[in-house]
Image (cartoon, rainbow, N blue to C red; front, side, top):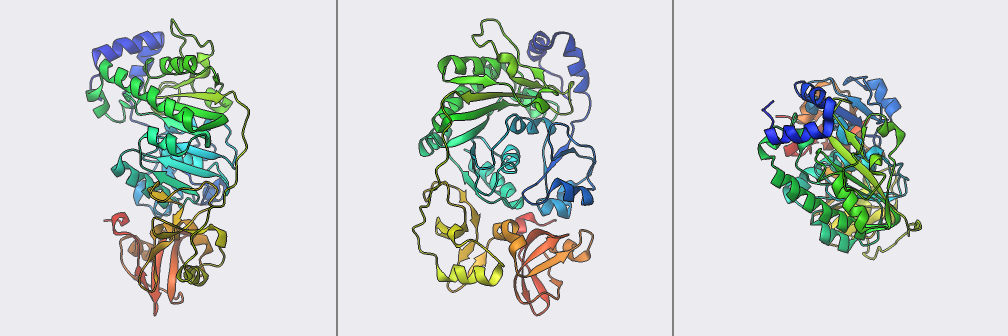
Amino acid sequence: MKKLPQEYETRMKQLLGVDFEKYLSELENLPVKAFRVNTDKISVEDFEKINLFSKDKIPYVQNGYYLDYEKVGNHPYHHAGLIYVQEPAAMAPAECVDIDPDWLVLDMCAAPGGKSTQLKNKLGENGVLVSNEIISSRCKILTGNIERLGLQNTVVTCMDTERLASRFENTFDLIMVDAPCSGEGMFRKEEIAIDEWSTDNVLMCAKRQAEILENAVKALKSGGFIVYATCTFSLEENEMTVDAFLQKHPEFEIMPVNERVAKYTADGIKFEGRKCENLHFARRFYPHIAKGEGQFMAVLRHKGEKVGNAFYNTRSAKTDKLVTEFLDDTLTEYSPDFIGVYNGNPIYYNNRLPIADRTAFCCGVTIGEIRKNYIQPHHQFFMALGDKFKRKINLSADSIEISKYLHGEEFDTDCQNGWAVVMVDGYAVGGAKVSNGRAKNHYPKGLRIK
């Protein structure tokens, strides 16, 4: 690892005291890799029967494991969205609060999607996740990860947090603010963060974080939770930001995190001049205390009376007959009430949280594109609704056919003619058009194994 800036070392010595040498020593070791089981697609119990990536579980994440497998991204199970590779400390913030499955949840700074997909796994069929990312290129990566995992009832937006808050005022039960930061906790994993570090950058980040938190307040419902997180260690971006927020917003209080997270993290630091006496409720994830990189998290709860969720029904567009005929031919079952149109394309979405056209990058599951007299199905449709398909081509993870499919090739099949979902060991990995014993490949070119 590159040499750390002297000023940074001085600051960390002040924060860590006698533990500073332990911290430095741990940075000499390789970063720890991990993954989560996508429980929207497979239960932990069923995954254990096919798990070949690691048996070493993360103690504070029920569906989390430390990773011990090379080139996991090429494995069919990864392509099928059964797992999401994520740094273990980054999994801690979403575990700080017990999430009701019916909640409306917002991830304000979501790309590449680790915390978003983790939050979605905690929601039920009536819960809705809105994942936002301000940078369009990163928004495409975020959408791709949500698509790969086959997640339903998700909305992806691409806007600054001020505009986001104005669109969704007083809406969410929980808001994840995984704020852009100076990245001190990622020095071992991303050495570019060392080159970009400066106290000026720390202060600039703290200013931006305070602005994002202000916008989170506008989008939060009475009685709701904000989970504020960073991957840095600086007081300015962490405890000082939280303390200043609580001074400005006496309607909020800092709450203890779940015990499973508290056990593997250090208390928040009570700096001189603070106003909040409970800053120790905040948590610091250090690499010399638990396996992973650096992370800070604090749970902020609005003290107001908890407001229940309204159920909306704003469907107004008449469903195209072409769409229903396509679904009747393709799926064994579906809810007609979930069929709608968004930005001109047919979608499948539990319309509990209405999303105006042109507001979102992606809304619900895109069924496909309406062509002149047929539907061209979208990859997202296969991934999210594959278990409901009438025509299924089930391949084993070590078969020649799945290898051909992931490389973009056709293969022989005894499946009936029509649109079929291609599955690996029973889980959707993509789609194919079957014609006279041949499965014509419709796996997106950008996802194929080179």
